[in-house]
Image (cartoon, rainbow over all chains, first blue to last red; front, side, top):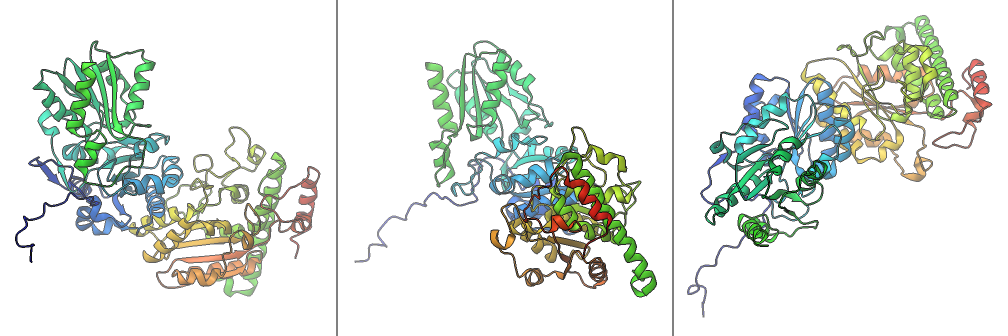
Length: 337
Length: 286
């Protein structure tokens, strides 16, 4: 008997594919904001060059390489020479944007960024895709500790942008910055949310996006999108949530963070798309202790110190507590304590 | 390179370079004596190559180490700093009196070469296997600027163990960096012993050729051969990067160091510095 014709069509399985969109259903997005911003900036900045380690298409650098082919250098799947060559080009007065996945930049080429680039204060801009848990492909491609590694590197500026708007603003800002920069990259169809808040990116500055009486979420990167969703969701429960966005991990805007956390009676929730070790949470905690600021509570929402599972991003974000729903549950239970 | 075609001028030029090499050796030994240590064995071994480079090959201006029209010389093997300081003192980039500060606090001559410290030091070497990758970027940049200047990267043979060296070798050939010259100091000695025992790298000529490089291999302590090889590598047509493999002898020029049990770090007793200088005064041993 042929049962195939009588069975209902199979539900499409969730995917652990390498490239998964972080955009929610129906969310406004912008295609390849990094590639377009860099290509546009390069029109007036002849010293800007782009390098890839066989991932131009997957970091959106292909937009730049198509517009400025003579300023695009393909280094092959070889991250050490990617970083070394970027240093060499910077020695010669260029402003190289060296791009690959965050895992390969930070874990594979660390010493080259440390010695060839940062120790010499060279103006190399390392733009690294698939930050934190933005692929379900498993630990080989999940850069959960990149911020910790890069914060530890003397002289390095470290940026985790939230959305397409911020990436568009950050590209000219980091190009104008004199020293080395590590910037996490969201690629493909990138959500656009910060335009609703009249936001302006500035290196080293944290921004209060909305104020709230009961909870202050201090967030970086794409977790700021989640924080804004959480704030809306909890507003329905009469919980008033503020969101302080901290796109620059280093240099760290301690003054703004301390000032915001000083307000009495608020639960402080720090959240990051990164392991709980060595990122925003520990930086905020240490800053508050140094300033003798004790909020009503302190919750750290980040990825566990573990090799994460492969799977579909929504599944994994729920599993590891960085989805909107998981954060709402966590905050409610903390407020009920 | 006209000197090579006129026998009389050629002999005079060679004699001048030999004098330069001897002085580089003397300066390195004097710096070693300041600290009672240093990579003197390597400095003595590479002195002839440095003499040929700074005396003839490299375009540079001692008064303006950052001159845009200079050839770039990268010391990937940062522990050879003592040798490069000697060459830079001899070339007039660093005042001779400064050698007394070698390796001291706040000196411009730290024991490992670093760009921020020393005029004429293009990069911070020392994390071995990085120099050639940086050289690739510099050569790409110079090519983009339509500059004819050379990028010369000196590395030790131990650096052939590093995967990044071969990443850079492949990239240099792929991008047609014909103004990139690599030099390998093949003294067959690395930290844990002879390279042939630590990690065999032969056949070197065939390897680099297979990577798409123009290769010359010479006795790196035969200055006439080194000059000739450098001239040939410069003159060769084509887009391939070039490499000089210089087989050198640790401690060259000081017989009692040449014959000492070979080690990465040759031990020199306190009373031996003066003996080493005396040996150099007597002339480069054959």
